[in-house]
Image (cartoon, rainbow, N blue to C red; front, side, top):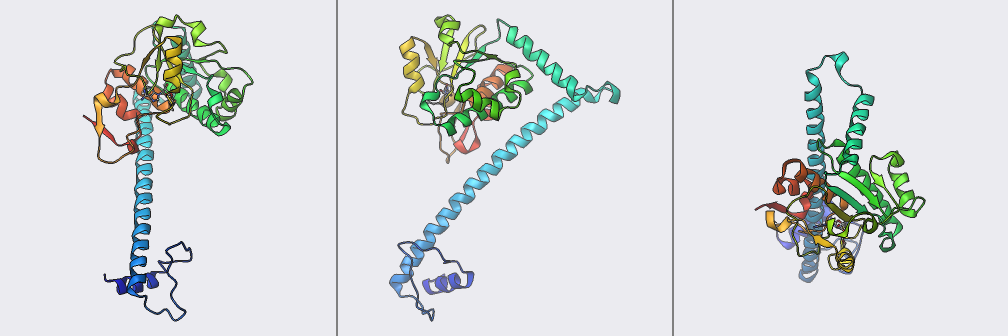
Length: 302
Ligand SMILES: C[S@@+](CC[C@H](N)C(=O)[O-])C[C@H]1O[C@@H](n2cnc3c(N)ncnc32)[C@H](O)[C@@H]1O
């Protein structure tokens, strides 16, 4: 399309609509054809708009894919449950309440176990966060707990440095139905006083050590932080101060860049937890990482 045609096309489509910016070209009332210079401006502007439009289209598509991925996962889980109960006659099938009781009993036994790896969320870092971020952390905890309930092989979960009545405790109660009855160990104590320091590994994206396995009887700490800034090293510095072992997830060992994506390796606590759960289930880092890392980050298997 040449410049004039493009201008006419714009007029027809109402494409150059009411909003103006520094490059807006004003045509006179009779809609005279613009000069070549004006045409150039129009072309630049429409190219920028097109680029913005393409970017937002891509973003929407990625979000849709993620939603679809989640739906598929939920559908699979439901199918799995149905398959398990299909062989039973209708009257034998457990009721919702019975299923809930079974899950609670399973989680109770996991929480009593001394051998299952312990995942501990350090809830004492709220001083680094805004109220909005604290609310997001509470939402992430809900997802973390939901994943543990649904898992055929749950992990032991502890929330440390959690003061009843604190801002984060209140946010958790607001964002999580039945938070007080969660089948996790909640305590205002610090993990530093609860566990021998040599049994603790602080998971932090900035560690130089790579996590290779989940060990029985070991405690893995997740920083209860909603902060995706790569340079802050908060948890690494803290862990070093306390003399704790640290480790990062083996993302670059098992995955590579797909071509487009943010490639950000800093994940939220529920994403990290999902990866650990999946790895604990079948010992496969590639599939565990792919299941937990959102597609928009742009990783594919090596
Ligand atoms: C949103 S991140 C917070 C990042 C923050 N800048 C820091 O210094 O930890 C929340 C927590 O998830 C865990 N985490 C996130 N990405 C990780 C990775 N790639 N490897 C290991 N742990 C990770 C860490 O425990 C981290 O504290």
